[in-house]
Image (cartoon, rainbow, N blue to C red):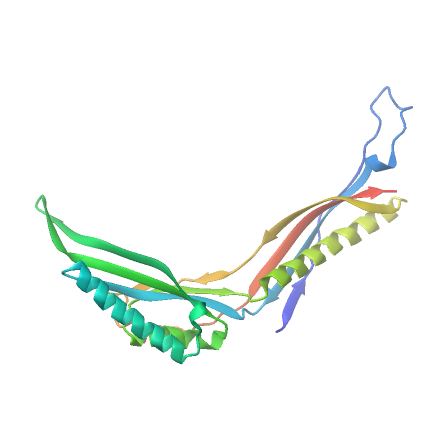
Length: 241
């Protein structure tokens, strides 16, 4: 996995609390003399994990029939996922909904039937299988595709690396500033972090009656994960010795 790492510049502020007017004889303690700098870091990586949300929207005159037909489709989808070596632990139900389908016309409300929506989220650890997960789910009868979310399996450690680099960036800038002012950089007094960047959602929402031939629509759309960028911004205050 190749990473592109960028460390960017930041604004720095030298702050030594001077004695107020009329009190110039009051000593200024070293703990009051500080330098504050901002450090930034970016780490760009190709995603190695994907989350695919697929399922079924089933209509039927009776609620029991809608549930039965939806369950059959979900069973077939899970069988196809198992054939792709997707473990059961990587599949979880994220939405199940049953509601009546009413038609309103001429001031009257008529029951047309019932609608069951059942969606599962599939964790795909081999992103080369994302297209297969979509294709197999549709072949099994799935007609609700709610997108692909790209992510990093080792996100926690990537975020920590970005944080370390941002802090080091702030420290180096503080050292340059303090040395130029004739001082010596002391211990860290405070650190404030802001994290940015994360999983990216690929919007490819399709549902029955909307996408038409879903399998054909998907095959015409290349699925490219690109890169994810994890950013860390810190503001660090150091004491000046």
